[in-house]
Image (tube, rainbow, N blue to C red):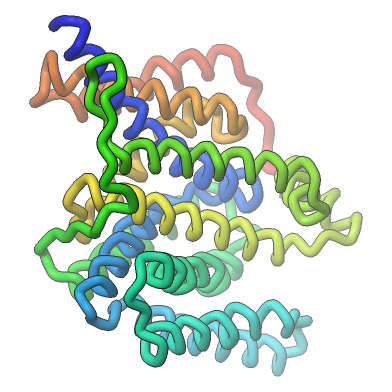
Length: 342
């Protein structure tokens, strides 16, 4: 290995680490607010990338039908809860079940966008509502369950979504057009414009999340729910709505990640699983609680994967996932066990 190869591997590690960082941020956000280890996070990546590919091919993304079916199912559940005397926030229910699915259907079936910007917006509108709809259908009825039960639900939901991905998109992979075809030479190292787009969008999302959680009332409410769910509820914060928002942000981040990686790698229906797992390793480095440590862990995972692909390519996945063992061992020595507050 010479310096040029090391710089090329470092570049790949940064680009991959940026994507894993987005996954880690989404996982930390969902877990801190809802106590859900959201294993299907990677499916948003695959669904976003493959939906964009279908739009660019002039076809109707199959995720539209999934969105409409979930919206109808959740709306029926809300009506059933209302008839049984439960308090239903109809404003948020109609937003997730009617307004956004209708907007997605109008964009796909009526406007049929042909520009890159229009297709990107359509994909985000298609994927983002899937998060809160899945939360309301699968997780909200078990909001008071322990973490293990929620994990079992996540594993089952992952299996269902992977099966649907195979049904919707088939076993063939797809790529999308690049957001940037530019080529740069930095210190003798070729750098693609799409790689810069990946890193730049990741930085913008990280800054946006920092401002959202630090400056906005909604972000502060989510932070309060993450710190103390019972205290937040007693303070008047609607914790169920916090779950909706956290899953919506997770789905949005997953869709953006899929759009970023689809031009630089072939995406299959199950590609998101490995990406989500590597994001989970990064989130574990941050203790499923710290956003900065999760980002640092993502960069570590990206660099480890890049250099392992050079030194020991057949074992690169093993080396990446082995990283979780010393992290868990160290945390077991320096953490104090506390019981669930609910």
